[in-house]
Image (cartoon, rainbow, N blue to C red):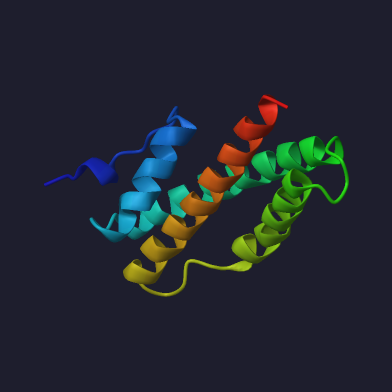
Length: 115
């Protein structure tokens, strides 16, 4: 019997990827799926991190928005330093944490588009 999380999604959108990873602690995916999510989310976080850093450089230094961006980008290193761990639950928890950070970077990037 296959489960929806057993299938690879090569052209999965970022929103769908984040939603799947955030749900990983509710319905545990396979360890292979967690590894796939981990890789995809890390790539997305690196791209988003660069975008947010670039946009933060254009903000007035020490402004509220600047501090929010700097704090968020500083947390990226800590988020990326974690590993999947040795069990399925730890892997699912890890990809959910990556998804939360990815969502925060996305929201910050979108919020700065209007500035």
